[in-house]
Image 1 (tube, rainbow, N blue to C red):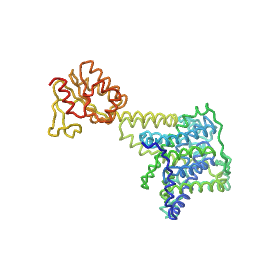
Image 2: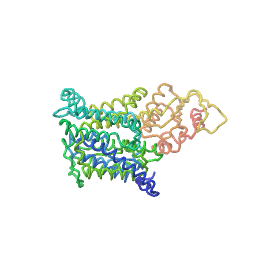
Image 3: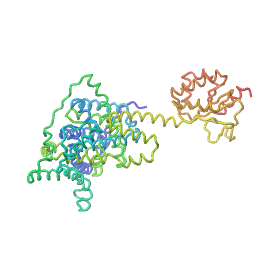
Image 4: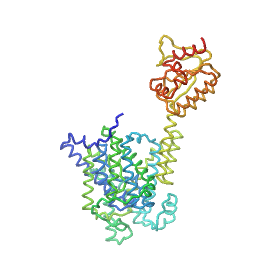
Length: 569
């Protein structure tokens, strides 16, 4: 196995044959994606519990790092809706400095995942777990936006999901109808924008995101209502936050071992979710552009991004599917488009950021409600709940409810444990152990020498058992059950292992116990069809001494001949 570091940023190969035509396509895609990312970065920043500029700083710094060091040609990185719940929870419990340290730790964990070549393994997390916590996140995001969407007057919003809804219902009488109108109209504009573009043939504006259109229209509407109708109840970003458009310097937070230990859980959650979301995004992108991303390089790039972002006051970042698809659909084909997207956001941040103070909070809540709807994947959720096996549905529902009732950290920890247990169960199910009665069918047998017979008769006093698949945990107990069901008291017990590709320590232990128990009962065990790899493992563990070298055979003919020799035929 190649032990070299698997770090090959896509930008290196992408710029080798770079030309003016490709740059023009990347330029247009980068500008459009930058515009699309603007309202989302602001909304995600505020919803996460930080100031709006921190969302944009994250998109700039992390987006640049992911394009420079990532393993996908078209991945666009930045803050995403999936992190809202995590970030808000960390800030509530550990403060901004705790979030900074947790994000730095997550960056280190992501780099380690890439260095240890675990990129491919991350993608094998069961789909019900991914759907479960993604849908749970969507419900949680929607829940957090109700106060701003309806303009409710509340002293504080409880952190618990159920308590939050109880508080909303208790304060429903404080609804501000102007704010509610702004929020509902924002959702309507975003939903109707693609239809309006087609209906009125506004093809030059089809790349303009509905979220940005909603923000422009609702901000202008709120200003007009305030200026000419005296409506002052519509809360804006400027009413809640002080906007700062100057670039911050890099600051390394003070860390102690006690703080680091307390933040391991949140950091692992950020790292795992970031890895899953970025690799899913890159995989979807591969299917569209016909390319293959480097999973390990992508994880290292994501790790670098999450080391850089918090140093400048940013929040966790990962690959964003919606922005990545926007990049592809507008012609982006190299990481240069992602770099241009970061540059566009930087220019907006430096020169237009003060205008963000006029954006209504209800409008941003509307944007996030649409994001939550898109994340929910309710069609996939319902289809999976109706059609899949009960075990998958159970995992889906448990992950979903753990996410919304407790938090994403608990859900991901549960999900990872479930992934391991499901893997072990499915692997154990691939191994079949059965008794061969009376005759051995030689059709398609790979471990026999004579080809002129269709069947071999099993002599009296001989039992034959066959193992199909890896001989590891679970298979040993099944073997014992089969022997107890069919076994009498033979003189020879032949174990056919022609379809055993490997044997682990648990399988070795079970096989050794079975051989020793058989010997105590006066039964000789003969192994048949043992491949070279498995035979080497058996000999390293002393099976040649335990059974005798003559009793480890390469094929069934030798095993039966040896059995006849033992019983004296």
